[in-house]
Image (cartoon, rainbow, N blue to C red; front, side, top):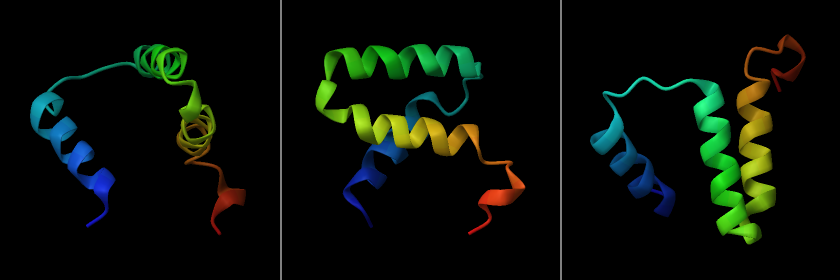
Length: 60
């Protein structure tokens, strides 16, 4: 188990029943980076990965 799994599990347990828009998620990610600028690169990578999930060219 990765350390991040605990945070992901907490998110699923505490907010798993909620439905949110991607616009809402994008705003929360921006707020997080504003408060934690050291995490800009990982958040950017996550956002890019989520944005491109359905791209057929990225099946590597």
